[in-house]
Length: 547
Image 1 (cartoon, one colour):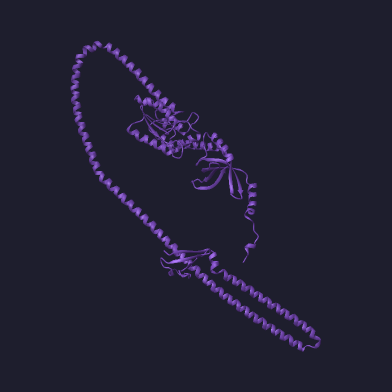
Image 2 (cartoon, rainbow, N blue to C red):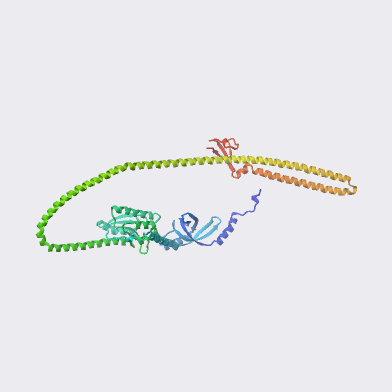
């Protein structure tokens, strides 16, 4: 076995040093386009950047930092360039990232710069795509085909709850309402953030429903000024689609003159500010009143002239007209009474039919509701039973697998010890038999040499003795080599056996289950439900109970 303690190795800092040098020398700041998933931190800014695929799946993710010494500068430049926008979740940005490798903190990425024009460019591209879609669907011009409102008696207002523009609007609208000239219905909604789309669409649907009962002359969407990024929340398809489907004119007064969005393009009328919107309403009411006054004066003047011209004729015809009027009034009273009786009878008949239909439908509705409630309860009970059954089955399978694994571990360890014991005995016999054979072979060789020495002449005694000595040394070397070889085999076999022992087996991640008396449990039928066992790990024992 290799001795890892003596193997050449590096310290952790020595291992990281060349990697750090390579990263810092090769990696240069790069411009990266990504979406912000999270921003946090007071001193330093910790920004989580993500990239998503066409179906919204997560493709890449990176955590980057804006260090405190650059945070204030980058934040102020970005906010100023984007008209008040801040780094927030969901915003698409273009940032310059510098990677680095720190021996304590690992691989890091720091944001060196932010390009605000990329964020504004994304908003512009979104507006172009939205405009194209509305044109293709035929919704872009739908509002502008409605007749523009010229008379205002009832108007719906959709605005943020705390908008300063709504306050300016009401300061001019309240006097009109108090004078009884126009009724205003106010609805509030968020105009920025992820909920802006759903809340504005919900307010438009409320106006759509109420318009059937109490018609509105127009609905006005208004808010005060804001940054381009804030107003970008209104460039939403759902809002634009809902505006185009309104059956009454939609007036928009959002932002300032330079802030134009998709609602300004598709609305029936667009105003730069809420004050100009209420000013238009005020002018229309004023012009209508002036026109009415002019018409009234004209009628009054004409009536006076006519009265003077036909005063004499009226006096002569007064008697005949009075007589005719009395006759006509009598006939009208009779006709009215007949019509009243007919209408009363028809109304009672319709009411009776409606009540009869309602009484027939109530039991049916009640039965349908009870049937649906019973079906839902059965489905819930079935799902709960399935979940419980699945959990019990999973727990049983896991318990069986653990007991089978413990039995297999103990069985394999027992087999390996038996095999190792047989191998050691075989090696011992081989060593003994080899030694016997080598000794017998050496004895035979010595006898042969002695016989040749006896038979040799005196002149060959020295030569024979020398040869015998060399032969004896060769035999001794072979015997020593054979003994060492057998010893090496014996040592390797012993190490193999020790490696199959319980301690080594535990160090490889296995566990031995023992009964209360400390004996290994090798069969699951040895452990009944409620039995207490000891689980032996490499670093200690843990008590357990069989469920």
